[in-house]
Amino acid sequence: MQFINNTFFGIFVSVVVYLIGLYLFNRFNNFFLFQPLFVGMILGIFVLWVLEHAMGVSSTLIYDAFWHGGKDNFIGANLLFWFLGPATISFAIPLYKRNDIVKDYWLEILLSLVVGLFISLIIIYYICRALNLSNSEIASLLPQSATTAIALPLSTSIGGIPAITAMTVILNSVIVLAIGDQLVKWLKLDTDPIGIGLGLGTSGHTIGSAKAVKLGSIEGAMASIAVIVVGIVTNIVVPLFARLIGLK
Amino acid sequence: MNKTEKERIIEEEQKDASPVIIQLGIFAAVLFVSNILSLIMPKAFPVPVPVWGLIILYVLLTTHVVKLHQVEKLSGFLIGIIGVFFVPSGIQMYKSLDLIKEDGITLFIAIIASTIVLLVTVTFTTRLFISISRKIRNRRE
Image (tube, rainbow over all chains, first blue to last red; front, side, top):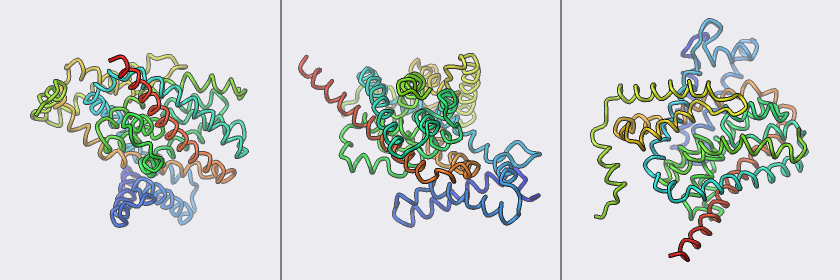
């Protein structure tokens, strides 16, 4: 136990599994299942799981060692996690570079996000019903278009389980990163960069936006604006929708 | 080559990037102010610290208080390796493994489906609205 109770255990594991993912991704011609983030996540969970069983300690102890370096430390993998903050702020730059699009199309952007989100909520609700999910599970999935800081309190307030919501928001990013742009191309929706950007930003949050930045300047700017606007819109629309379908 | 006014301004602002320490300083200042702002916001209407930061930095850029060359390098770097920053969040799901055990597969399918629904619906709606508005604009001209 002693040797994993230090700050660099979590950081080391996170970086190494990501690098292994990156290697596999390049080795197998960018095959989508070998997306570095996806591989890294699975490998990392596997490493922790193996350690838990090899050392015969509780999963909480292993998790604490990973996340903040055990009971005597405050920093571990959460140091890397912290950098998501400054990285999110960075999206102001792609947004600024193409703010001419925002000036021209702000009404269309706002309308598309509100209407698109509302239609999505209806479809998601019926998918959940079809899959026989419980009310609390449905309530956990509805706030997923917002980022964690908004989605978790929202989930609690409409009777959801925050842990499921947190997992959903994380998986959103991973899924969008893996198949997002392929899917859009495949459905022939890739004619409009504004649409792609807003779609990637709404469904994939900051990770989806990073993908959008790689696709092009308009896509990147639109994903950035989606990250800002969707959080606020979700906070208004989801409670209304939950009341409408009688969740709470 | 015809350059728009916008492109000219961006090029002007991109000249010689500021030292990393200055770029870090600007980021730290923005984060500090965002932290205060998000504390002031009412509980029922949370705006996350990074989103405040995004808005503040954007406003600073549009008002030309902060120039592009003072933040562009650091921001490009951070966006470029954002995948690594996200790995701990992914591994964090280790904590909720027993949560998935019960309804695991169904929940998983629901999450994948709803992600795709969000992506496709928003992209499709936007494309529809933009093409409608372009038609209206063309008619006006």
